Image (cartoon, rainbow over all chains, first blue to last red; front, side, top):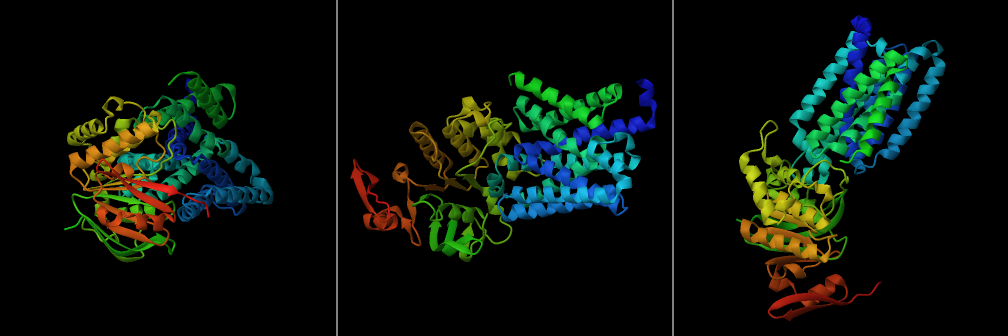
Length: 264
Length: 259
């Protein structure tokens, strides 16, 4: 095991999975508290279609996924603003549409199917130094945003009406929340896979919520549970030679079931 | 100088006017009650005062702000909303929620001053909830939550207290407790209060002004000028009595028909 961790490729993969383990629960905490978890599931599937489009047009799949997902997040925010938060129908339509596009573009680019599938199930060993740096940079930016605006975010998740009445620009914060969610999904996809990105966004915050009396505790607890799941899942995946993303989510789910049996 | 001046104000959503040509003033010592049937624009009026929605026409003046563009006055209005949907596992104690009342007064990197922490304790005592300060907010009864939100609204302290249906959805005992807390806050904090309600009776002993809103009609002014049977009967489209017992007035809707 120690020898394996001496390999740069394993080190990069390990760091990428840990960063995803921190980033996704951090973003997911706000989706849980605002009951918008479907946003992360929808954006993950839209991002996957972005990867397929990238392969079909022979461009960097990460860039195409970023473009498609960020534009979709922005569009969903616009719909949300005009419909007083009722964007789930539009998200469902986008979800289906982009999945259909993904399947079509996979069909068109048969030679890239294996690479594209790695985004679906995750392939941390394929993470490059640039992938890791991007993930790290985005996580740092989001963490700074959360630390600086923790009071505004708390106000908003408690009651957007009270936040609005207190002079907080709820609309801009909601846009940033949508965009950071999109960013966390796309940049974590290679490390853990589009299919389980949603799990890492939802399960660690759900575990943390059961034990948290205060908002700050829940945020930190989510990140802690996410990192612990990523660490444990990564090691198990090396031992058992199973996909990392799935292993991480299974660990997080076991933690969730333990948490529901323990009284708060 | 009045705290609020509305002169022939019309407001609504997406160009649809909800109320129009409303004029009133609120002075420092006033307790104003806004009441009327459902759907006449009471909450729209609250949102206009708060600057959440801009008036379509007319001139407005709230604590030195004209309500157009940036409104620093928002931080000086203590607001208790009508409804809020809260996750039963929401991670916040009553004290956490009360403290949010001072957040708009702080810069992002500024720590919560001791003065605000002491103020939060005092406000919790004012509304009679000090022993519940560490209880998760979501585990409180709806009446306790309303009183908690009142303690939150009193942080600062504000220059105006705005309450939207403060006793909606609470039981009778809690209603008395909420109204008592509002009366105490009005007297102790010496700030004008605007209470939007379906039932004016609990406030008749302290109210100084009233706005009665109806469908396409409204009356605003001093309570003794406006609270008359013919006005109330016109607004509610049914017979309304204004009764007096032991020096206190009550409103009684005698006969309400459908259609």
